[in-house]
Length: 254
Image 1 (cartoon, rainbow, N blue to C red):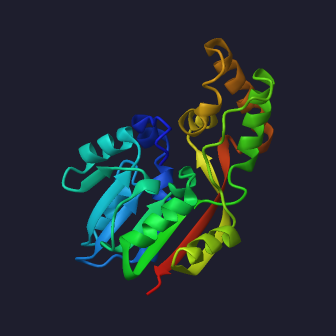
Image 2 (tube, rainbow, N blue to C red; image 1 turned 60 degrees about the vertical axis):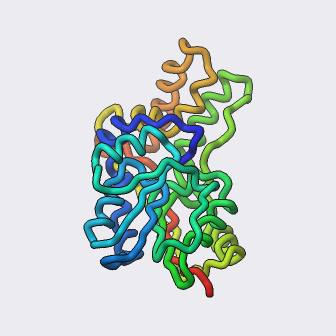
């Protein structure tokens, strides 16, 4: 995850555990074997890292967030967790497989990240991932940007997310020695918990747009965003985020 984003690990675990629960199928795509060396890139609070360890693999979790790594170490003290940025990895042919769930879209230096993934894998090593793809949270982003823009004369904070198309990411993989063997871009409408589900989601994942505003304006702007989204993302008594995911499996050439 992004080193620039301060994560509320407690809010993440309490309200947004769907992030790791919905990514559990990517472990099956990677198919880690007992004794294999596996890297979990963007491991968050470590639940899926632990699930990989449960398959008998030797797994290392890496995340750029001190808050997330700290929580992961508390959650699973027997697993190795390392604080590190995905674009600055120094691994060299150490891993049989690399897993990543809901993290690559926070890593804006995508080329450097893919180079690091390729370098970290053994020849023939596998890479399985799922993250936000083209069109992800388009309705939420539009509402946030339109509302906040009115408060700051259009001087919005720079985006901190990267949502590529299949073609864009396949090209990136191939250019760096990884052969994509499976790629799928799909809608995943995702329920959020409770009446304040959208508010909590924005506070966790998009609050950086609001931070430049004067404190007295942040809550007002947030309330306006939530109300703008109610007609389009409040369905049958609950909030549903307009997620779109890119899932892939690739192999290191050579």
